[in-house]
Amino acid sequence: MPGKRLTVVVTRRLPEAVETRMRELFDARLSPDDVPMTREALAEALQDADVVVPTLVDRIDAALLAQAGERLKLIANYGAGVDHIDVATARQRGILVSNTPGVVTEDTADMTMALILGVTRRIPEGLAVMQAGDWPGWAPTAMLGGRIAGRRLGILGMGRIGQAVARRARAFGMQVHYHNRKRLRPEIEEGLEATYWESLDQMVARVDVLSINCPHTPSTFHLMNARRLKLMKPSAVIVNTSRGEVIDENALTRMLRAGEIAGAGLDVYEHGSHINPRLRKLSNVVLLPHMGSATVEGRVEMGEKVIINIKTFEDGHRPPDLVVPGMM
Image 1 (cartoon, rainbow, N blue to C red):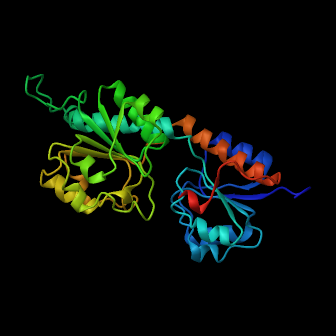
Image 2 (cartoon, rainbow, N blue to C red):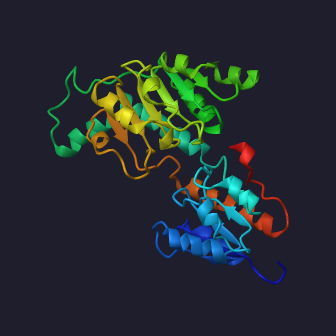
């Protein structure tokens, strides 16, 4: 579009440096308030923009895409996951979808280890005692947790983040096991000292800690259902920094309350911010508000990837982080 800048609608507040650069390069219409767009406002954005920059809370389904204007040619997602976007319908309508892969790998892996330690060492319980002023002093049997060195970690989903978790876990002395849609190449598997399980059922029955690191797709919805959760050892803990829909949250809550699973560390939830109230009350659960990728560095890098995708598209080339239905 020589002589005319692309109209780019951004659905949420982004880091100031990212927003400023967008204004320099495009006709960027920024969000004045850091709240999700209503469905009506999102539909209006799809009608008026050349490019829309949504986040994971903006559900762009077939019905919304049917309202898109002829100008809309790119949905440049701010985030790696695109399960909130109907990518296949977008492509059918001639709308490209890009994302920001790889940026949050190290940050999310750090948070996974933090949750593993938080649950096994009962860190939130200790914080609660100290904040309430109820600590009677040190005692040999007080606040006993478990040592993670020597424990078996099962990783469900051995992509970038799963492998980053494996590297950290090995440094802590954990034994790494994994289940993945495809087995890793031998040299990667050997480098991680990881044991592959073709059967997810067999793996979850043997591990002490299970980390969910796979995306949400139709095939992974409730992959950890009630039946599979019951295969876990009563002493095992489960950690999820990926997508809440992978776990049947109600089944998990029932089992945690019954002592059939020792604990859980969750950064994501099946129904977004609507969390099972019974889950909130459990002392053996660590709940975080989707903080896995929440670092200043990560958020800025995500924005930079979005800008590169848009600028590359504007210059008439394929966005480097183009998402195609076959990738999902």
